[in-house]
Image 1: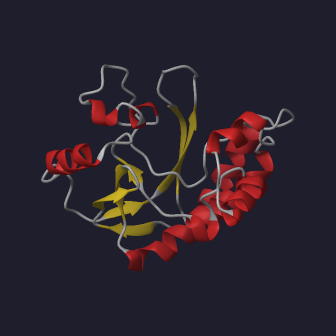
Image 2: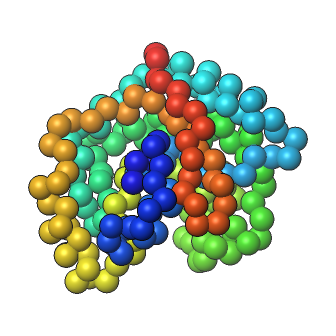
Amino acid sequence: MDAAAGWTGKAPTPYVETPRKYGFHATLKAPMRLREDCIFTDFNNSVQALSEKLKPVPLGILKPRRIGRFLALTVEPELHDDISKTAWSCVRELDRFRAPLTQVERDKRGMLAPELMQNMEAWGYPYVGDAFRFHMTLTSQLADSQLEDALGAITGLLPCEPVMLDAISVYADPGGVRPFERVERHVLKA
């Protein structure tokens, strides 16, 4: 599914049932609810201002890798620092708009290592800062045999050209099983 164009049809394979709701994307600032006193326009204007301070980031040729029980496209380790700095800028600059976590949101994460729990409490998401790892999710959580099948199925279908992170997009969750909808795309301009 293209996260910008949207798609609500049946998943082409059960391997993508979970991530298709979010569309094909890379998360820089994890999904969040806006504070009750926050006006969306102010948030969106802040994303625009941030995008004007950030420069495009080369991601190289993305490679499919296993992350836990799912497959994702990832960057080579030598390219991770620049994308990590960009993600950390998004987390720090936009966190003032985030509503406090509910107990349900905390419980959803289950048991976390102490440093991940600190991130969760401070930033609303455990995998920020040093714990951030750029990835673009390709599959739902799968059994080992399914992971091998899925990797085989996508081999040869992925682009072989270098990719650039050149924009930050804002998405809205319409709720239920409907996929996220892109509200705005802000081009990186620095």
